[in-house]
Image 1 (cartoon, rainbow, N blue to C red):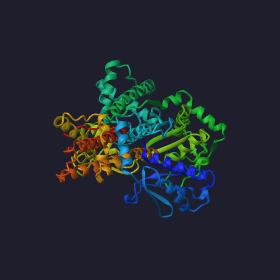
Image 2: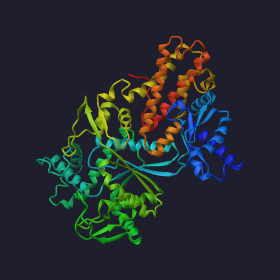
Image 3: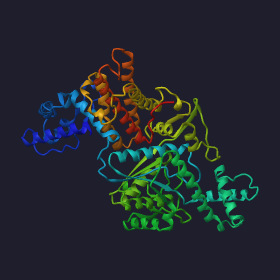
Length: 584
């Protein structure tokens, strides 16, 4: 169901035939052969680089390969012309019948059009969000959450076996401070004046109801002067309460993750000892003193003998500490154990979605995965830039430390889940993104959410009118698939079909690049082509766009716009956005 892949297969078949008859020498590796839409539409419908890729292998000039290959392509039923251009590119012009056949494929497949076997069922672990369980999710977490969720859907569409995972950072000083903050709220619920929340604690009001619940359940049980008597219990209470809030926040954003993995379980179950034991056996851990780094001194550098991982052997800039001065494990040590656990669960392919402020952590983690897996595992870290909030062009301030921040829930409640998700995917993940509360709600072509949704709603509106005005016309599937598509002869109609036919290729390219924002771009372009065709029809009374005097023209055009709606719905599903049937 991928016309570009279909033509590529025919190109490769011709190459194999030319090799068999001696025109091309030897067996040739066609892995680098591509078939793409040319940047300049005047060059044709598709172009292949086959001659350029094969020239070195065949020990021939690219044009000497391109000429016989173009002749073979020109003889195919789907090809109207095959022209050799430049150093050896072959530009193809395909028949109108070929493109109409692509439209039929869309109608037959429905929203599964664009599904692919590219991933071949290979398992991939996508870990995203993984924020500390110390409070509700705020707007700073939203972009990574949406990006990770859309990437997981995109990979699933092209045939990967995807596991969506959340790593709970429930060990370390930040969770101790959560427990202390919660204990303050517990004492407050018992009537004690706790005064100002100390620095380093979590001052947000979200801990007030948790403290009240504990006080109502346990009374004075935990009002003990010795912190050691209650700290572990309040850690457990606090993490459980915050993870319940976080899970609900994720549900309101439309995110369901299959695995929630506890960092504390690595400490309790000996996972860190086992992972570092493996590295020790491989001779990759030693005791040494790190040289003071140039420039700004990182937090984990200390001028003392330390337990170090030889991360420089795997591409890192310096070796990395595994123990703190108090003898406890560093966060890096726990992260090594966590990724070892992923690999042991069968995930040689791992994708982590992190905030841009963790960019300096990437090399050490990719080094650790290579070391633990003997280069059999691959870690791909995707960094997401922060989102800047505006209202009418004026910045919206937030400060998590002060307990005064815009929560994910507030964002979704104000503009809606679908708007949030779509806008978060309108830029590449590592590029800055501005979110203006007013702009994202505008009903104009400048608002990509509205523009794409309006295209889908417009199609649904047409079908409602057809049902009302032409009750004898069966506009359901599969009746539309039987329409005489040869009646779609206008160049703008064929151009729209070509955009629809590009959908499977767009999906595969986005998945390979791990860039779900490409889906938003594609949908915007498709919506633009549809709206342009719609407006052309309305501007020329002699060319009624949909409901034509000729019933077969009407049926064919209904088939065309049904396909537009199907592909839009398919793309929005990857983004986690529901298509709308009417605009309000």
